[in-house]
Length: 518
Image (cartoon, rainbow, N blue to C red; front, side):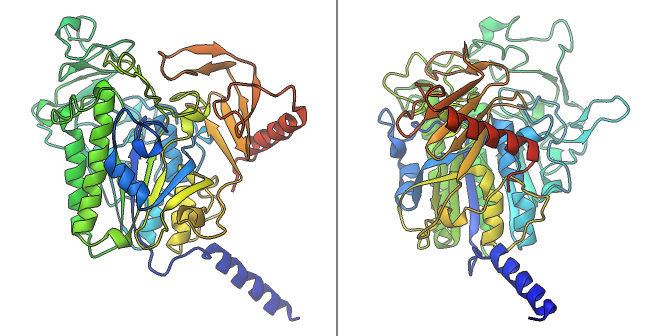
């Protein structure tokens, strides 16, 4: 055979492989990411203490995954990994971001937004960001957000056409909205200052003015007070720009509806990044008292309302059959995460992590196995899937569905599981998943089939029992669980299966050292 024909054949085969899962008419994409929502927190996953009819409807009309994961058990690394398709531990400063963090995802990084924008989509992120804003410091300066000027780089520099943000996370200052590159409604005569040290001796804090708080703190979260709640960090000024906690969910729905309406005749990608049910849990007054679980349960009901409003808008715009919705969470549940809001006292028989141990901050299943639902009406056959899928795979999967190829050095840990997400016959999800806790602590969980290896870099397992306050429990450096028989990861069987442990240790070591898994 002519060598040129042989090479051409290989090239055609490669291109066909890259776009094998492209769909004839790629859908609009709406990713709804909850915050701190556990596997057992919604009724379609077994909750009985409250009802989530809109999320249940999403599951009934789509595919409910029993092995749907995020890649980390805290928010910043999961969001980083979801957008970039790269495990967060591979990059420095990807732990929970402080208020003045510079942009963690640098301009030029391939993201879901840049991929879909290249495919002709309008792109927006609305809601919690918590991935830093502004440039890195130079010449010894810290850098980070210029709160009174242009917040650049940010989402618009990594593929989003527009953004409307809670810039950090709401237990951290400042309590302002960011629209595109600016703090919204900021009065130049009342400049915004954000720092990590008390600006003056008489600055009110959760310690000095604790008796004025409408929600008391339990640990940390006792610096600057806003809306009767003390937060992490300090800020002054910007009073005209400040929001009320109770109004966040309404604002996300309002802005999301506006974006979808504006782009109803063109393909769009919306990242609806909810703050519910992260602390401080202050749902709107119309949701307060709606459950027996306190503000945590009420915030779940508020989240469910948001999902319903997005679905309602898609129905009204006749876009439900043209839109893929992905519902997920950035990590598992936590009850006491710094505020006395009754979450522990009112838990009753509710099990936020479902049948799993752990929660936020841990690599136990409860830390990263969360509700995960896909719906694309008339394209996804409703049902339940046991395939292993992860939010980190959305980048490669959406690239494939929209006919976009990925550079070799982009989205290096993201796999095309689009066939599994769409419930295609003979579809396969991942064959393994590496889970991390926060930042680069060296604590990992590696699931391969029915086996799960834990590795503790700091020799401690945090928050093993989600129903209790945060605790550190000493554990061996390595543990092995057979999660098919022991989903709660109660029995370490590493001594009984040394061959499996050796194999998984080698696989974990290779995944870390190779710098990529795709």
